[in-house]
Image 1 (cartoon, rainbow, N blue to C red):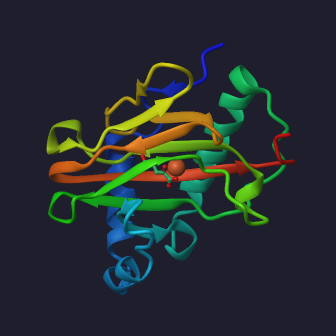
Image 2 (image 1 turned 180 degrees about the horizontal axis):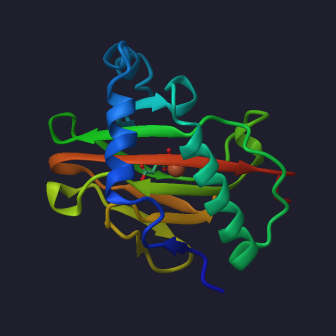
Length: 183
Ligand SMILES: O=C(O)CCC(=O)C(=O)O
Ligand SMILES: [Fe+2]
């Protein structure tokens, strides 16, 4: 079984630009960015919750369609809901933006129900160095496509990381699908 599912053109170039425009137009996004940067040793990124950004309902609809298709074609997990807002993240060279190896399944009542993770690439591949999303489905590492608008879907329990950004800014949009916890 291939553990990582990818969609080459989940969002068009124009759609990616529109998402970034909306996320960045948030009046207090800079403050929120700083406020929600946590786990500094694990992660250096600025995040905005998409649910807080007006006019992005169509983005959520698309994400749901993409996750449903990936699940139908590949994973066949028992998915029940999207219990968290999608998260737009920026990893900047000047901040040494990165996210070290982790699984998305957490201890909380919501993070414990994460089953599938979907990540959309929102930056042009040539606009940054480093910042690769790497996933470890087994003994080897799979590097996610860097293509703008591509989506990568994987089981939330898989270890994954974002390597340090050494030039420019890498932006992404992550959403989780939830269901009865794996056991
Ligand atoms: O930005 C990415 O590519 C991955 C984000 C991630 O792993 C997370 O938010 O849990
Ligand atoms: Fe993650």
